[in-house]
Image 1: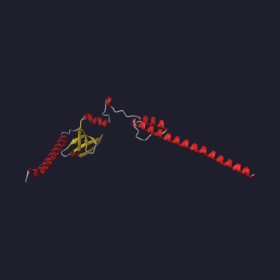
Image 2: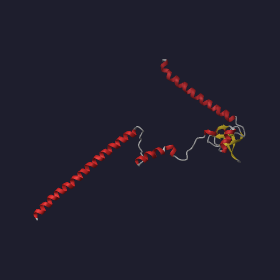
Image 3: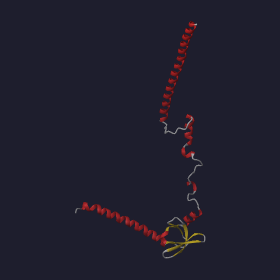
Length: 185
């Protein structure tokens, strides 16, 4: 066998080794964290519950989930051991963002959607434009509107001319008809 035939297998075995090695490191770090727990420490379980450690046994931990409420958990159920300041912040419900870094939350949605811009466009046409008109497209839209107006004016003039011709034609016919009627009498 050549080395080119064995190369894919070697790469696959190397990748598997690296993945298992990193997983073992994570497991060892989690085990070390659980072993360093002390009574009075704040923890978060893998289910997301925050509690205070009361007693530590070989495979279990007694947690106080609320004042006077105790529960026994497996050590493996502890997801994280929290620093005192972080645990107190979570229990007190304090905002983690302090100072000027606070995000500004608007009172209404109009500042997020650009409603002022839509209102200005809507006032021009009497309706809100739901199309995607860009600044460069406004000129094209204006030209198209002018072309439509020109066609409408042309159609109106044609209709007016036709209407003007009809009464004249009717008048000629009635005059002829009257004249014929007058002669007949």
